Length: 145
Image (cartoon, rainbow, N blue to C red; front, side):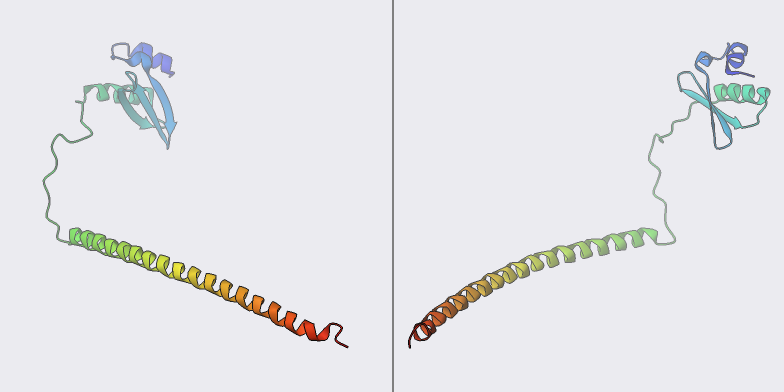
């Protein structure tokens, strides 16, 4: 049976004129009333099975997906709540350690950069001394005969 046949045969169902069918994971998913209603049947469901599913869906009361009141806290015998809290505490401690280490590493890199600058200055000074020494030696070796 086609969707058009279902629409005409079930004209008494509110919103059936918007009936659509989608196949997914071995099921036929039917929606109507602009997506406000839905039903699912097996991929090889008969026409009567499809009609029954639609009519049954119309008879069911609306169910809220979100509960009206929060559930009461239940008691855990596994201690999972403690484990989650302990895990969270350990993660915070590790994050703090990483932050402290990052601060220490920044200070160490700054000192290393200062050392590299001092080393560069020393190399420049030695280079100047070498140039002066070569100039002094050059006085005695250039045409002194």
